[in-house]
Each structure stands twice: as structure tokens, then as C-alpha cells.
Length: 213
Image (cartoon, rainbow, N blue to C red; front, top):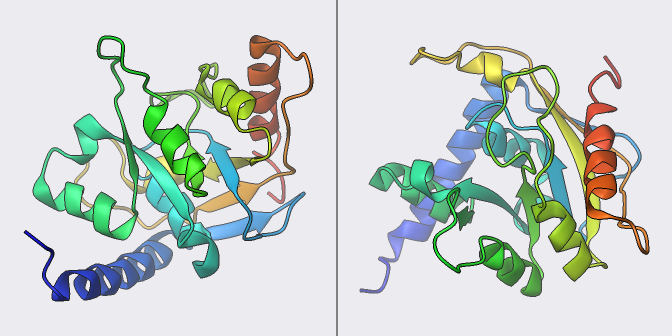
């Protein structure tokens, strides 16, 4: 069945309400160090401590970048209810990924298809949420995408404080000033080995933790 005429309007209206709520609750400050906000194809890669991370980066981006940037979303979590599925599909235009590999399926294929269409992405190279002060070792996905799409700009980002907005076990969000710091782009150097690149990418994210603090 074709979508009703009102659904895009509802998604747009709810998107603005959600944006206003997130910015009121967290401030959603964007700090651009090393690169300006620019409408070019990018992969933003960041630390990951909360399910709200994708919402935080989305809210921190200026409007012209939100429209061309798609966050990745864990399918098992973000499709548990029709509301979550609708929000991630209609508002964020998210790319769903499987956290558990199924058979011979390539878990990066949905991301590759989005990049082939010219979309920008928000990814979390740790793969799962961490609870330590520093990110977990990055998994191979970022390296494989950089190898396959060498012209896409890779921008590190550090998300600060968002895990404190919704502490574990709480159902009511706590107003906390949060920020996303975007750093200087990196690139996969010719002949660079996978682990060396992933460690360097992780270091680029960690280096942003205290920038402007």
C-alpha cells in the first residue's frame, strides 16, 4: 500500500519536535575542529556509549547535512516496536545493520549501497556500546569501507556526556549539557595495514575528548 499523503508531513513535524527536544535536553552543541560542516560525502565515525548516540550526532549536524547523512542503526534494537522502526525510517532515514552475522551475508552491504547512492553515513566502529572512558578497539568495518570508497571523507567525532542523559535503569532523561566534537579528516594511506589504520582512527576520536573542554 502506498504511504498516505500525511505521513511525510507527520515525519517532518515529529522530526522538528524531536530536534527541539534533544537540543533543549542536551544542548546538542557541535564543535568543528579541523574541518567545517560541508555538504560533501562523508563517513562520520564516533565513540559509542548509548543508544542515543545516533540521535545526538543527527541533532548536532546543521540542517543541510542532516538531509544527506544517514546514521546506522542496530536492526534488533531499533525495530523492536513500530514506533522505533517508524522514527528510524521516516525521521532519520537510518541504515539498518545486523549486529550478528547471518550465514554468508555481508554486514557492510547496506552501508556500501548507501555510499554508492551518494549518502553520507554516521557509524560507530566499536560495533557495540562501551562503558569504559575510552572506546573499545575498532572493528574492521571502517577499514573495509575506506578501502572500497577512497574518495569518501572520513571525519572522526567525539560524543560527550550523552550516556549520562539516560542512565542505565532510568526511564526519565536527565538534562545534561552534551556536545559532539568533529575533528580533522583522516584517510587510509597507501599500503596501510588494517589494524594500524583502525588504531589511528580510534586515536583520532580519543584526541577530540578534551578539545575545547
